[in-house]
Length: 422
Ligand SMILES: Nc1ncnc2c1ncn2[C@@H]1O[C@H](COP(=O)(O)OP(=O)(O)OP(=O)(O)O)[C@@H](O)[C@H]1O
Ligand SMILES: [Mg+2]
Image 1: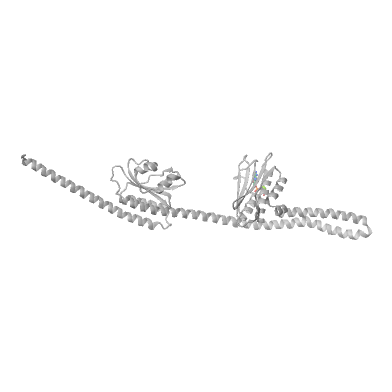
Image 2 (image 1 turned 180 degrees about the vertical axis):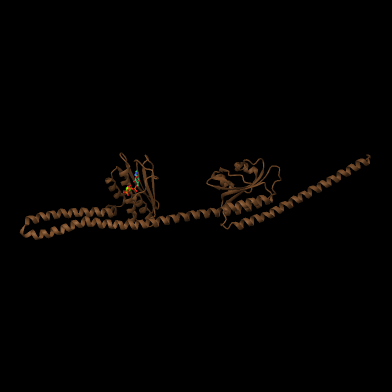
């Protein structure tokens, strides 16, 4: 039987006691750590509820996210927390605590879709799908929670602990996931709000422009009425007065001076022809007869023949539209052609294109002439009238020009109920 001396027994007892003490210490430390993490995870509930309660849309989203990020970092015992947002094919760091400044990197459509559907993940996953998010982290461990809404990537929440610090407990992933879901709803709402605001602003501007253009159309209509009255007074009315005087004279002379009466009747015939011409010109200025009978294509071809510069018309395949719409397009093209004739310069040519694109009528008058700088050339009555005419039928006019590069006037007009026949 082997002999054991008392010294050896004592050493064995000391070692056994140390082992028990070590095990006990490790156990106590682990319990303390779990308690601390549990307390932190409990505090996350507070982060969540305070975050949710602030999402009442009166506080800017960036401010709410900044507070949320700070709370998240404190309560999860992180060294850094960040929120990234995804838009226009890129991810961008929106807020970070501590502040790290902006960062941005592109993301393809398929990468976005994969990230949007990913669970809360760590470094190994990020190395494959989001390597740019790992830049400048000096070996820190991170958890990334994708923020998405109805399958679309809206951003990321990044939780970071520096290299060497204990990793986050597994329960933290559930918290990050829930937080990401709430942030997703918040970002989605904020985007819907701003889209709605932009639409409302557009509508407001459109309504204002329409109101102003209606007022100008009324003023222009009054002015036009006065012009027609003046033209009738100075033109056709004068012929008719002369005709009635000459007719009376011819009747009086028919008995005693038939030769003179005959001459007067001849003059009368000429005066009637002139009066008819005058009337035709006047009627043409009000509403071109060809436009009324044959429509835009034929009326523009005729107008192109009268144009000062060589003009081609492409209007095949269009139908007939409401008279006010056909008049708006016709007079705009006419004014644009007149401008081209006045300003495009020698050797310039013009092209008129009119076509229907679904529920929209599109026209374009382009010239290859001198062009002009839109900033330095004030809009005259011609351009204002074009805008008003197009605006009055619900369309939008565009003028593109550059010195030496020609001029293009174009417009799109929604057809709505305006199509009368095809
Ligand atoms: N096709 C074009 N080529 C070069 N400059 C053009 C052209 N169209 C318009 N412009 C410039 O834009 C200005 C504004 O045109 P707008 O038709 O509004 O007025 P206007 O032709 O000068 O006068 P009006 O009231 O008689 O039409 C013109 O004075 C001219 O300088
Ligand atoms: Mg003009």
